Length: 176
Image (tube, rainbow, N blue to C red):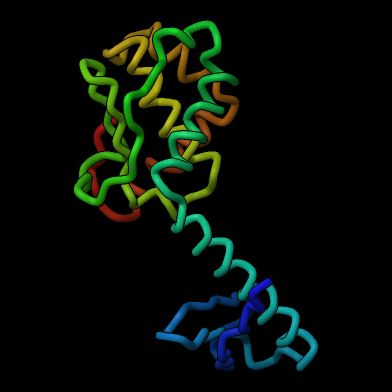
């Protein structure tokens, strides 16, 4: 079993920072920003927490197209089981050329493309976008029947709000 090496960590304390902690990679180094008032024990705790968060985020970014297809199949079985014969995607893949939408589906050839920009979003948001596109394999338009399928996802409304917030924060207009 290969041993995982911990990255070099640089802790930067700030008198202006009150409560928030953040971290980012700078090459091979991880920079953790903390309030100056933190004790050494709090510093240690937060460094470990932030390293775990960065690793989880990076793990999500390593998700392959095959894993995305497997995720789609789990969503089909859970939320679209009554349409399992219709919802057979030919491919589900991450793409980097979608800047005006979160995902897209071409029902004619059953291909689904998901924007790489959502890879860092919470899993329930990714699941919502994926289910939204899968529902287009049953109903190509955005009519009531389509929304009934999408709304089977328990966090559908919350995910739409999250995506609208991201769009508004970036002053982007995103297409459904």
